[in-house]
Image (cartoon, rainbow, N blue to C red; front, top):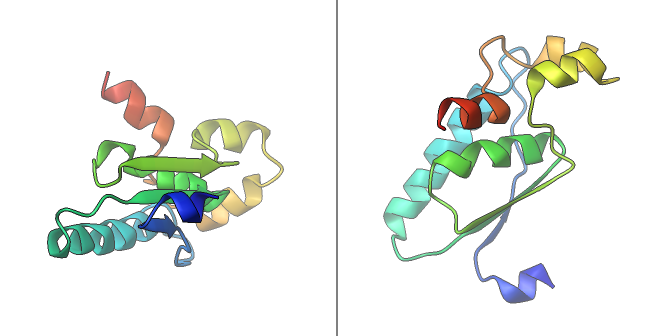
Length: 110
């Protein structure tokens, strides 16, 4: 259904950069998406991400690149995940200490 409704529907298939996740992944995608937008300025895009892809997709809310962003089963607070998630070992090994956090971005931009 979503594919039929949107001509430029992007599903985040994120790169994996061990120990720098959340920063290098976001920067890589951001550079790619902005370059695509520069080359296709009148294109409206919809971004979809699930799980960690949903987390990455949520970070683009402040970028104004996409017409819509859909985050499925995304975590939005790294601190909350570190406290309560069964994936806390993954978070410590994979995410950078300076990884962006959607919750913090929203709080700081109020």
